[in-house]
Amino acid sequence: MLTLAAVLLSGCHADLTFKLDFHRNNTVTITAREVIDDQLYQLGRSQASSGDPFGAAAAAQNGWNVTRSTDENDNHVVMMTKDLTIDDFVKQGTNALPIASGKAIAFDASAFQQVSGLFKDTAILHTTIPPVMPKTNADSSNPWASAGIAMVASMVGLHLEIKTPGKVVQTNGETTPDGYTRWDLNLQQPTEINYTVETLNYGHIAVAILLGLALLGLIVALLLRGRRQSPAI
Image (cartoon, rainbow, N blue to C red; front, side, top):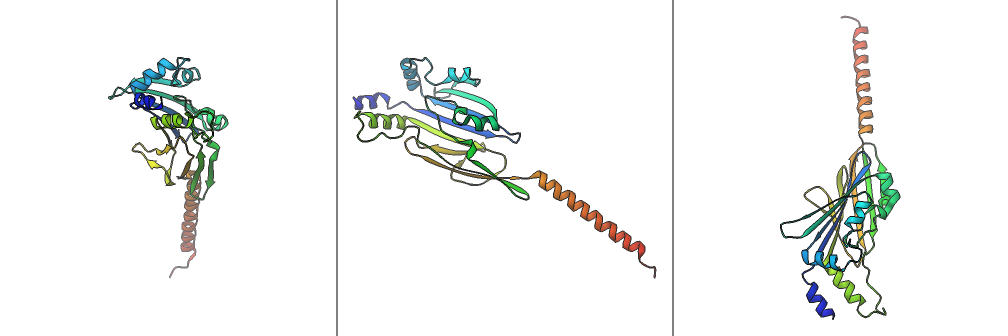
């Protein structure tokens, strides 16, 4: 049975990307992009009792902007997008991310640490994404469970992408052409996320410039005063 299922599903694949775009105005744009091949798409529609196998209808009801299209390879593409304030994003936690194709990731936005410097601020993210489909125990009562989950895991690609203002100075992710940092998430093992970005502290820089200009003005004033008070030769 397992061999037959593997043959029938060998061409199926879904690729899910969760994107977090943090903005300077303390908001974040969340995007979930699903790319599902036609075989898996039709299978999902026929098997799902809810009639919403990829979470699009549920996302739309929860205020997400949802679009559907097909790409050049006839894959089905579902995009879900929503803007949140950073405070709301942190409060909602994992619930802020949509469940795409039955998959969600546990991302803790509060794991970001902010360190203020004289002229630069540093944002540090160090967290671990738990496996979405953890391996079952060897003594499971269902002898097909481990093999079945491993099969499904091989059909699904799951990714996290983050973009924040500033310059990325350290990360264990990969930089994408559009400026995001990307991690390929392991569905059956934890994935460690390390990300450090520096931004200029414009407020501190402005104060330093004003103080510098004031000091320069004071020096010039003292020099001019000294010249006026020096006796003529």
